[in-house]
Amino acid sequence: MTTTTGPAREQTSAPVAAPAARPPRSYRRIWTGAAALGLALVIWEAAALVIGDAVTLPTVTETAQTFERYLTRPYPEVQGKTLLEDALISTGRILAGFLLGTAAGLLLGASMAGVRVIRELADPIIGVMRPLPPIAFIPLLVVWFGIGETSKIALIFFGVLPVVTVATLSALDAVPTDLLNASRSLGASPLHTMLHVRLRAAVPGVLTGMRLAMGGAWTAIIAAEMIAATGGVGFLILQAGNYLQTPLIFSGIAEIAVLGFAFDGLLRLLLRLADPTVRR
Image (cartoon, rainbow, N blue to C red; front, top):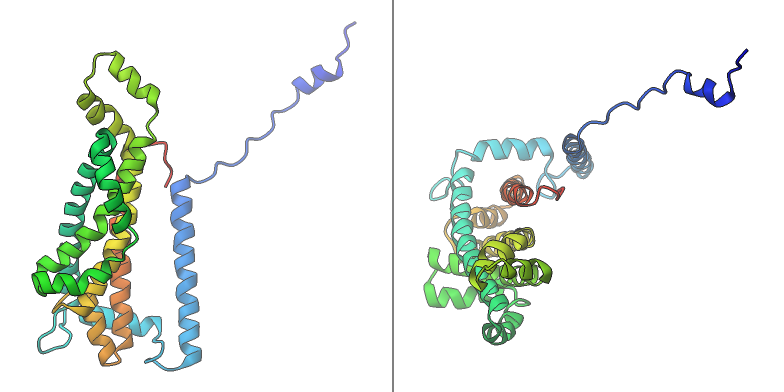
């Protein structure tokens, strides 16, 4: 008569229940981020109620009502613009300066990575420009171009150019040499290798630099609109501050946050499309 051993009995035992499936990572991040924002709003509301002074710190409700009111109503009411119009003005300036600065930075960074002479000539110039805050150029650009759109776009351009250039150069230098040698051994020319192998491999690093440059672009344009402009979110915030309209100040800040988050989200989406292994 055969007997059942211990291991055999273990094999015939009931299978262990599989752990419950976790929600996808993206949904967890959305809910976690929403909870963090909700907690921040609760703390803001509680602090405003404790202070009890709308000029010092308005409540979330007062800020939301002000935002809704001036979204389609101009401020100041005589010669001002709506929040929506100011947002479109600032967005147009950002897009123009950012696209021009990014294109120039990509071209310069790729040229520095491919041609040693260009790198030796441009590297010290970029090294000097990169630590300089773009805000320092506002008076000079106003003298050169006036207070029109050209000075705002030029300010963003000079702020974006060195950041994208350094990011492009670093990303291209980080491409493995074996990958380049494999392309050349298959008959690709140096230009073809740069365009179709090296640049494509460097896209994630370039997009990360573009995200950093976008944040700096918003800082520069808001400062410029506060100093020399007749429209834009920065101009609106300055006007609201002159008349102690704190809820409107917070409305403008919220508008900048939403626009900046939207642009950063688009760049993050491009980064995920360029490199699906990156989880952002």
